[in-house]
Image (cartoon, rainbow, N blue to C red; front, side):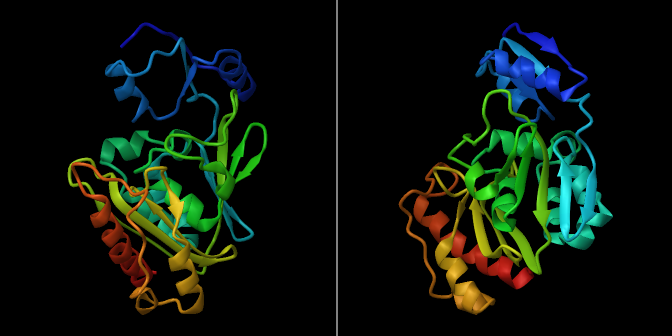
Length: 263
């Protein structure tokens, strides 16, 4: 690691002020991506701002909406009786992230702020039409994700919570890398207050995206059979040592049908 200063503010305003004043300061949530990056000297922050004392944890369900505090861990989401009752697909997604250490340290807010192109949570947020709440405003899912590791967050803006409208049907299925458990292709399907939405993670060069052709087919007929002739072009999909773009295009079709069958 490079040398850096460390602060652990006790108020959201103080944390936001440090981050807004210094473009090279970085926020620390669960640290499951950030700490390895620091160890590899791929990032050189002037100050690490630990968000652990801000109290941004907890899960509430009211009026058909599930609201999860940004510092709530994946393990807490997976184990929550409230989430299992309202959006079981979201609890199942959280329970399949990484391993026990990652699930007990990683947070939903940290995952969304990082916006890794293979992360699971972005697909749930986009497919469910969730709202990202920050210390400054509320951001619709369709406006939040802006490309690989890029979001609508501004300097000094900190995610405080995420609100999910409970769907009538939903499921998440991923074809995971056997070592990292990151999604080579992950698909979250949902039918609810925000309509029929299908979000794909792990496959796009620009990160999570909506599969509009699948959405149109499922809006007419919510069944795996409706997707039999739906394809997606390989252009713009990832091609790496794990899978080619053509293979990922094929996987999107397979995984989407499995998700609909599981919903």
